[in-house]
Image (cartoon, rainbow, N blue to C red; front, side, top):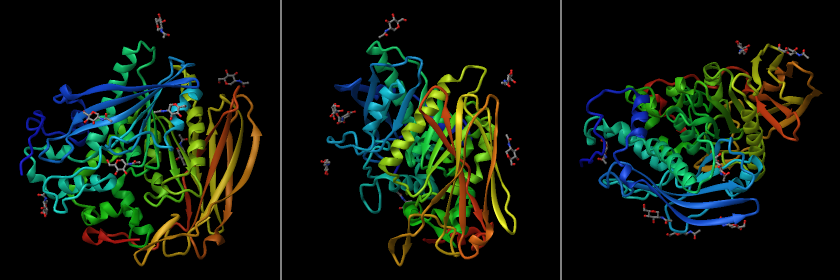
Length: 507
Ligand SMILES: *[C@@H]1O[C@H](CO)[C@@H](O)[C@H](O)[C@H]1NC(C)=O
Ligand SMILES: *[C@@H]1O[C@H](CO)[C@@H](O)[C@H](O)[C@H]1NC(C)=O
Ligand SMILES: *[C@@H]1O[C@H](CO)[C@@H](O)[C@H](O)[C@H]1NC(C)=O
Ligand SMILES: *[C@@H]1O[C@H](CO)[C@@H](O)[C@H](O)[C@H]1NC(C)=O
Ligand SMILES: *[C@@H]1O[C@H](CO)[C@@H](O)[C@H](O)[C@H]1NC(C)=O
Ligand SMILES: *[C@@H]1O[C@H](CO)[C@@H](O)[C@H](O)[C@H]1NC(C)=O
Ligand SMILES: *[C@@H]1O[C@H](CO)[C@@H](O)[C@H](O)[C@H]1NC(C)=O
């Protein structure tokens, strides 16, 4: 099988991972198929939603898959009260390439949110395009979501020789996912201009899970993005965090990662081939590109895909790189799929984040500086939270959250796990405690700590963290951010794996 390749630059240069993505995204050899078509206009209270059909890109040819040309339903909502200086808020959404695909109940609040944020909101669906059937697929089946990504990883890991020159570098599905967003930006701008709407060509981009992953990556290659809101995707430093997962779960990986496990990728975790793949798709490879950008990450404490403590492996590095502009908000007692209540809380936090960014003049930063340290002794576990640059806020409150794993065999705070081939609900619950609530004086800082008894972690692992809620001046809005997880005791239930033994089990 030979794939007809649409690019020409690759045989000429040997590129590093980061340049592959940048070159793929900026390659315009497929531009003749890119277009948008206005399907409908829907005026509601205070805003108008335009539904577009966007044809975004060509990814390889029909010799690779039955879906080489990608199209998307795009919902552009323009509020009557638009503040034209505001960036465009852009949601990367899921969906299938079927004629009846429309806005999900989950995404709908995002259209009317345009009125609250006085900004244009856009929802781009069908990222990735799906289902997809690959040519020569031994199972000859239509694949969706992680199953497609894993299939493209398997092509990269096992079938490089099928691709001429170095074109296998463009096969990880994240590549077209990222490029379709970039093309979505381009066509949104063209559309808004055609409607004579005044706006600013800046974007704040977000999405959940693999679309959160896409948000991280597109931020590395599109200069128009000023801030990023990844949701339930904290898996940066993939290799380190897969090792952490192996040790935390007592020798394996969450059942939710089945698609990646079943292609044998964990067995190849430490190989050169995997390292090369990760250079392409692990957001940490692009860390230099994140300078000057702002991040607000939302995570779920009971996530069955990703360990919320993944952030410990990279938060400090990225914080240094961005001059302390990386924030995390954690949600207790929800899993990877969140909840309606969580989604509402998320939108409120995003509104405050956007308002703060918007107040950000060239010289004065408005976002707080948040840092913390952990100090665990034989008797206590402690988190010390430190905040400064708080002049945009009038008061604050601090809250501690904690939870226990079910036993000492796993550092496991998931809402569900695999037992004898069945998925079971866990008894992991999060509790909270208010530490302090107070007014803020001009130029004041916050330094406060939460201490808990070590003895609680004798028979189970204990995780705890602190949330800070800051009330914005001249507004009813609040901005809430969390520290990392402090976990006691500090040792893993099993040692690290090496080579093929990293295959592990599904847990
Ligand atoms: C159009 O707006 C109405 C009223 O807000 C809403 O019920 C309907 O779902 C909208 N339709 C589309 C396609 O957005
Ligand atoms: C969108 O356009 C593509 C052509 O690029 C077409 O195949 C698809 O059916 C269209 N989808 C909708 C919902 O109109
Ligand atoms: C949409 O159409 C597909 C077939 O094209 C069908 O399988 C699916 O059930 C439909 N979904 C809804 C919500 O009607
Ligand atoms: C990819 O390589 C594997 C292992 O060598 C092989 O079994 C499979 O058939 C190849 N896939 C394709 C699409 O050729
Ligand atoms: C857009 O800006 C131009 C130039 O400032 C102005 O003439 C025009 O009225 C504005 N259009 C809208 C819809 O606000
Ligand atoms: C944050 O805290 C850590 C641990 O105490 C410290 O090493 C680091 O220098 C602090 N960073 C900033 C920006 O204050
Ligand atoms: C706050 O800090 C700024 C800059 O250091 C200073 O000019 C100002 O006087 C301070 N305000 C108060 C009330 O201390």
